[in-house]
Image (cartoon, rainbow, N blue to C red; front, top):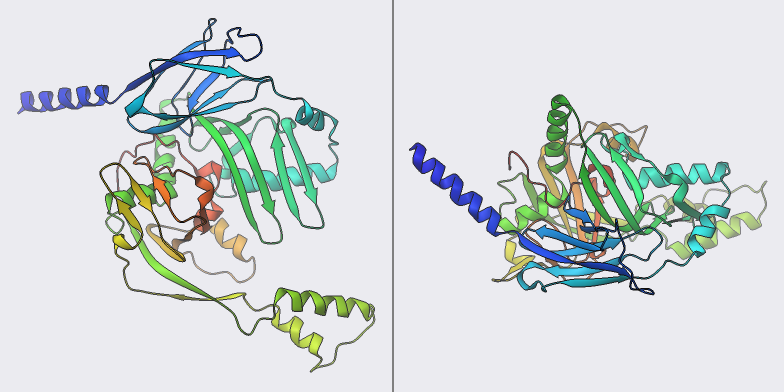
Length: 402
């Protein structure tokens, strides 16, 4: 029995080793063709990365799959290279172009007044998150940010002339985040951001490593990554997920946005001392403006995988119209999530509930839980509340798979 176990372990070890693919190449300055040393080369959203040597050379081993290889160096425009381990070239040559200085000048000249610091706190809350793990994450170099806020549209935009440095003390990761886009729409309460993070394991005592392992497992359970992996395995219910159709229809009793804006303008035109009598059309419109924009109804019938998942020998694809409600029954909501809903109408925590919709006809899925175009997914509810502080690298594997 012991010999059989040893042979099995050796076979699995050989299988794992054979699944590693080597990609190598050089990085040079696009203008001078001189090699660049210490350039960061990493697989997007993983712990897999390296740096170039004095000759500009690098070598990186990747597991099976498709990756975005990020080539980043201070003072140069980053490169994003699509990699398929099934068709790797013998070698690649990356030519980096010097970065223009416009953004750096904006960052340097930008005033650091009270408004800037207030906007910085808004950015950190919407980027790192307000959950337990987000609150234990720190942005180490906020000085590289260029923050603009438009009071007319309540749009907060953030750019950076250097990669952001984040330390996640809850999960034990140092994250180098190449921020591409960040927009927070204050009036609608949603955020859109895109970037290319590299994860590095932090050093710590045995007790810290045990705590980080527990927290990573907790972060994984019920996450979007967990859901995407379970979808492809067709094991949603076995792993604690319930997926149901969510129907949304416009509320016929709520005035249109145009009617509400016109009523508010008419009220302002009457002056600050004007009184609104019962039955007044303005009073009626503004009172109904507080009604929800849509009416929701949930179809309690299970949804077959064939309605939203398409698979063949080479790929998996998520494709559907409308909205799906996803409930994770393995964990309940944090108290912080309830507070962001309402500080006054308190309720007891229930199972974590999210809503998923697509902005495109379909998205390709990777076995590691990645999607081909992250901006094609629109998440609401619990997944929308969790941010970078609760996210894990794509090469993370749970110790106790659910």
